[in-house]
Image (cartoon, rainbow, N blue to C red; front, side):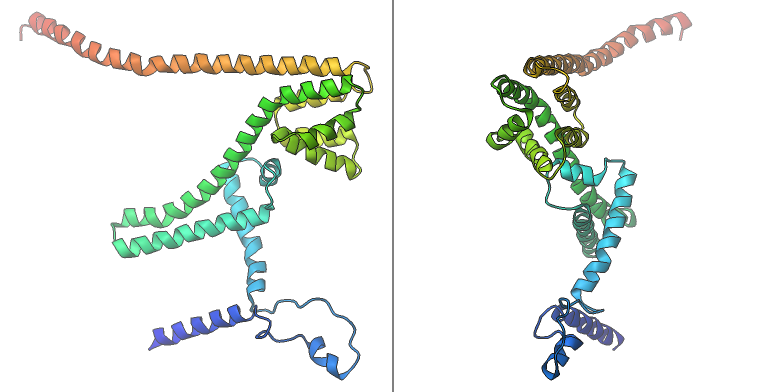
Length: 300
C-alpha cells in the first residue's frame, strides 16, 4: 500500500512539473489577473514558478557545471572555455558540462539497470554502476580534447600557405587588415575561420595587434606565435612581405624536421618487437647447453 502511495505522489509531482511549462495550465501572474480591472503597467515576462521545469533547470545547471568542472580538473585537461572557443563550438562551458553530466547520468541509469537485470557478482555490478558513467564522462571530454588537438594540427599545417598568400597581398599593395580580411573571406580552412574571428574582433574596436594576440593565445600553436610576432613588425619595417615569405619557409622546414623525427622514432619502435622476438627464443636455446654443462660439472 505504501509503494502505491509513493508512486502516486511521484506521478503527481512529475505531472505538475511537466504541465507547469504549458501556457494553458500554468497560473497567470498577479499583474495579468489584475489587468482587466485597471491600468496595470507593463510587466516583465512570465517567470517560472518555484516548482516548474525551468526552475529545476536553473538549479541543476550550476550544480552540473560545478561538478563537471571539478571532474575536469581532476583529469588535468586544459581550460574548457579555451577549448570550446578554439573549436568554435556553439556551446558555452555551462551547457557543455550539463550535457556531459547528463550523459554520465544516463550511463549511471544504464549501469544500474544492467546490474539489476543481470545480477552479476558485486565487483562486476560495482564496475557497471561506476564504470559506465565515468566512461561516458571521459568519452565526452576526450572528444573535445581530440577536436582541439586536431584543429591545432590542421592550423599548423595551413599556416605556411596563409603566410605566403598574405605576403603576396602585401607585396601587391594591400594593407595588413585588408589582407587578413580577404584571406578570411576567400579561405575555407581552419585558418580562414580563425581569421574571420580576428577580423570580427577588429571591427568591434580592437586593434590589429590585440586581435592577433588574442588569436595567438587561443590557438596555442608555436607557428602562430611566430607569425604574429612577424606581423607585429609592420610599423618597424617596410618589407613585411619578404619577412612573411621567409617565415613561411621556416615553418615548412620545421614541419619537415618534425616529420623526419617522427619517422625515425617509428622506425626505432619497429625494432622493439623484433628484438624481443629474437631474444626470447635465443635465451631459451642458450639456457639448454648452459644447464647441461652445469649438470656435468656438479656431477648430478
